[in-house]
Amino acid sequence: MKTQMKKFLRSGMLLTFVFAFMFTIRAGAANLTQVDPQPNSITIQWTAPSKVTGYTAQIGTSSSDLNTITTLPATATSYTYTGLAAGSEYYVRLEYTYPNYDGTKTYSNDYYGYFQTTPGKVTNVHQDKWWYLINKLDVKWDEQAYDTKYEYLVKTNKGKKKAAGTTTSGSLSVSKISNSMVYTVQVRASSEIDGKTYTGPWSDVCYCFTQPRVNSVKVKGNRLTIKWGKVNGATGYDVYVSTKPTKGYKKVKSVTSKTSSVTITKLKGKKFSSKKAYYVYIVTKKKVQGKTNTSGRLYYWSTKSSTFGYF
Image (cartoon, rainbow, N blue to C red; front, side, top):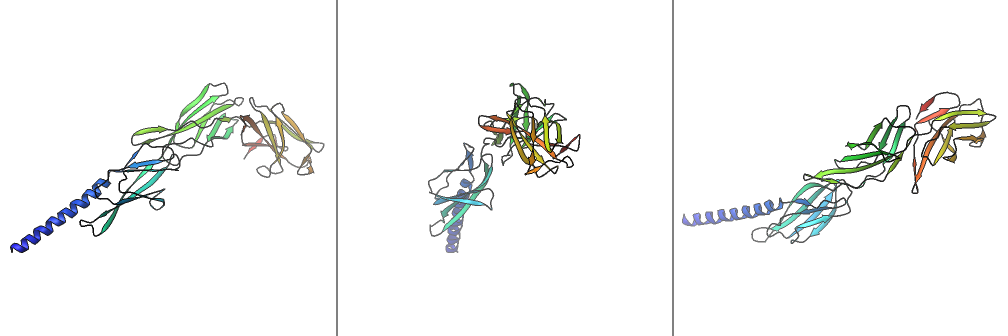
C-alpha cells in the first residue's frame, strides 16, 4: 500500500510539474505587443518563456496568407517585419518550440494577432468632377487599406481657405465654389494604434478647376469652329471632337491659355459636313513644376443642339 502511495504521489507531482511548465510557456507567450509603429514596418516584442528552443515568425494579410517565414533564435524577444504597405493591417504569427520535461520530445505552440502600419502619404489626389451649373467640386484619392481618417484642406489660388475637415472615405465634395477660380486640395491620413493617433504627411498639391464652357460650336464651309470661355489660372486647353456623344473622341488641338477659339478642317481625315452632328468637349490644363493637372470631362456640346450633355 505504501509503495502504491509513493508511486501515486510521484506521478501526481510529475503531472503537476509538466502542467506548470506548459502553463509557464503559454502564459509567457501571451505577451505579444507592437512597439514603435512605422509606415512600412511592424515591430513585435514578447517576454521569452523559459526553455524555448527557437521561433518562427510569419506575417501576411490574413491567417490564410502568411507569405513570409523567418527563423529566430531562442534568445530573440523582438522582431521587425519590413517592406510593408503603409496604412495597412497585417496578421502576425509567432510559433515557438520547447522540450518536454525530460528533453526527449519537442513541442510547438504559437500566438498571433493583428497589427497595423501607420498611415503613409496619400496618393492620386485628383479632381473627379467639377459641376459647373451647381458650383460643386468632387475630389477623390487612393484609400489606404486600414480603417483611416482623412484630413483635407481646400484653398483658393490666392491662398485663402475654402474648406477643411475630415472624412473616412476616399472622396470629398466642396460646394459654393467659383467657376472662375483655381483651387488647391491636399489630404493626409491618420489612424489610431493602441490608443495613440498617428498622422501621415500631406499629399502633393492637387489643382482643381472647371472644364471650359463652350459658347459656340458650328460647321460652316466644311470647317468646324469652336469658341469657349477662358478659365483664370489655366496654362492651356485640349480640344476633343467626335461623331458620337459619349465615345470615339479624338484630340484635335492643344492650345495655350491665350487662345479661346479654334477652327478644325478635318476629323480623322474627313472634312466636316453641316448635315452631320459633331460633339465637342474641352479640357482645361494647368502645368505646375512639370506636372500637368487637368479638369477632366463632364460636359459635351453638339453642333445640332443649343444645350449640353453629360458623360
